[in-house]
Length: 308
Image (cartoon, rainbow, N blue to C red; front, side):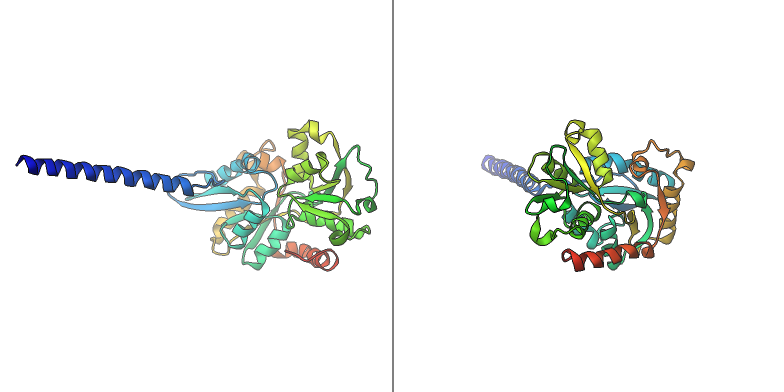
């Protein structure tokens, strides 16, 4: 009997030890596969919509600007909530958008055209058209005076698909006599801030960006921005698009655009960053609003470089 009890005790100990080792192994595997995601955590019993914002800022800044907008929509539309999803760079955002991972999205106009081609529907735009333009920065002590001075030099841009910060400045450079593909070194550095830092550090002689990130850079890093200046502006195009997947109920889309175009009626003043960042302007729009972008892209592809 004593031997039997010892066997049972030993077997039970081995079983417990095996379970503990299994749990430890599972924990290690979970840690190995862990990857951070740039999303808000929203607890809701209703329908949750993912709202993707293109990387006009770094993820932390995107949450500062747009998380209050998600809260505003969630509190004013019954039975649903909105979760912000930021992406660390343009390629990651592009992949999510083009695979239709987002329910709603705020892409740039180039991405908006590509989203339309993948079934998304435009329902609005945010910001002033006059502010959607490219700017080219140089150091204040730079010898660059004319566009032709860029020949043989390196110029930084956020990403090939950044319309205002890359494509429009490249079109400007091309139209002023410098062949973008053969006469300058295009450096795609991943973000707006990286583009500006490259010219500040002297790694490039000029940098492409656009007004919202440049204005934010001036506020956040005035000592660095003070060493830079805008040397050229491009012609404007059309503001950022608001798009929704076609399977989203029309009533939900209607409520979203109504709330975004009437913020003052719901206590969302100009002190809210999602408004002040874009001059407080949100207007209804549709696919046709962005046909002018399609025309620009055709010219760009014919005169500058192939679209990616």
